[in-house]
Length: 336
Image 1 (cartoon, helix red, strand yellow):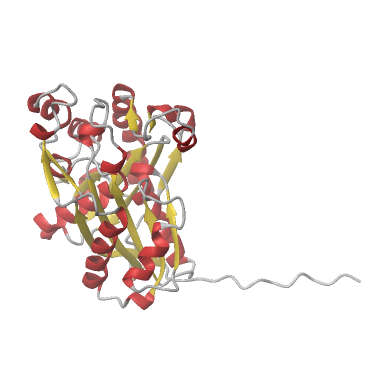
Image 2 (image 1 turned 180 degrees about the vertical axis):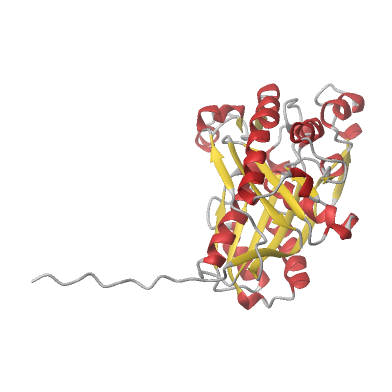
C-alpha cells in the first residue's frame, strides 16, 4: 500500500519590497593623494586624471569592519523606525572580515539587537551589496523575514600594499546599511546577477593564506589588472545595466539616479555615456572623496546622494556592482 506524500506548507510574505532607510559610516581619516604618492612613485595629478580620486577615507588601526558596520546599521535602523526585534535576517557583504569564522553578520546582529535573526556573510566583492539586496528581497517576499538588515562593510586598508600601483591607492574604508521590508508597491526590481570565474585573476589577492602561513609570501594583498577591468566594467557591465532596466520595465529617461560601483571616476563617466543617460539623472560620484570601498561602495554612494539631494527620495535608481570574481549584480530600486 502506498501512501500519498504529505503536501508541504509553502510560506509566503509580502508581495513587494522596498528599501526603508539607509545608514553610513566612513573611516575616520581623510587620506589625500599627497600622503600616498611616494610609495607608488606617482603624483596627485596622475591619480586624479586616471581615477578621479582626490581623497579616500580610511579607518584608524583599531577600527574594524565590524565597528563600521555597527555604526551604519544603527543609523539605518533608527531612520527606519523599525524595532530591531522585527528584523529577521542580517546579511553582510564583505571581503575584509578579519576572521574566517564566525561571520561578521552574527556578531553584528548581537550588537544591534536583532538576535535571534538569521545572520550570514556573503563574498561577492564589489557586487556584494547588490547580491545582498537581491537575497533580502527574496527573504521578505517568501516570508522568511519581515525585515532584513543589509550591510556592505569593508576595511580595505588591511588588505593593501602601499607600494602597489594597480589598486592600493584607490581603496578606502566604510560601511553602508539598508533596511529592506514590505511595500504596497514594487520597490526592488528583478536582480541581474552573474559571474565569469575564468577571469578571476583580473582582480584578486596576490597570495593565499596557506602560502602566507607556509612562509612563501608576505601578507596577502589586493591586486588588479587595470586595463582589462576597465574594458570589462565599461563594455560588459553596460549590457548588464541595460538588462536591469529592461527587467524593471523602465527606460533610462525614467531614472532619477544612477549609482554604479565607485571603482574609478573614468569608469563611472564612461558608463554613463554608454547608457546615454539624460541630464536630469543624478550620477553618484562618491569615489572622489571616499575612494573605492568594494561592497560598501554602492550603499555609501546612495547615502551621500540622498543626503545631498533629498528630492531624489521616492525616485528610481539603477544600482550596479561589479568586481573580483569576476561577478556582477544590478537592480532598479525606489530610493528611500
